[in-house]
Length: 289
Ligand code: GUN
Image (cartoon, rainbow, N blue to C red):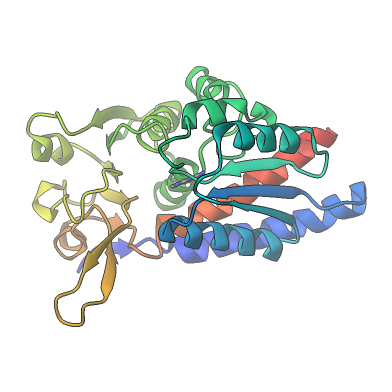
């Protein structure tokens, strides 16, 4: 193996420690802790794990965590009313609605109801628009975490060829906007892209966010490329029947060619949570500023 393994866990721990220090100063100055409300509808196992991790990280940073766990048959109207209450609650600086929502609820409607100034997930169209035109706003936590890893690894990103694989509103599109703002030459590839390996081969930076286990192979990569793997795919292991987590990149073959690569787990995942905590602190500070 030649690639450096990008330690997202360590970078996230350092970021969370710095934020915890700033939270102490915030409490001293304002007599309260920043607060994050997390809403989970239903009992999807993966979402339940994510919500638990987010609540734990919030408390560890010295912040208030408000968890709202609602049954899967919660009506859209009821959820919108909860969002309204959280929007009006001065103890709540950030609101996160865990996705996916049950199919009978219009997710766009719910996300658009969140006060954009409490939208620490950065999913509100106003924040997506702010990012696109270079205004201050909240940036989605996963792409923000990827950018922090890339900056730590490569320093100045200006002029580099970046390929983002995946065009979701949550990762692919904001990731491309962030890289463009860093003056990268950005390509967004997706399921209809012709000859994806050839497109990836031109990239100094590859961000894979497609949700296909181990799709990106080592022989697709430019030697020394920096590879950020956003995928979290559970696959069944034949030997013991237990699932294991793999990314969207075939780590074994990619780590022979890449200059640096983020592992799964322990790469992007911890950074997403650290950035959520960061966005919540920023929101609280803006509310007082
Ligand atoms: N579901 C998967 N990733 C995310 C995320 O970053 N935020 C929210 N709210 N839901 C998710």
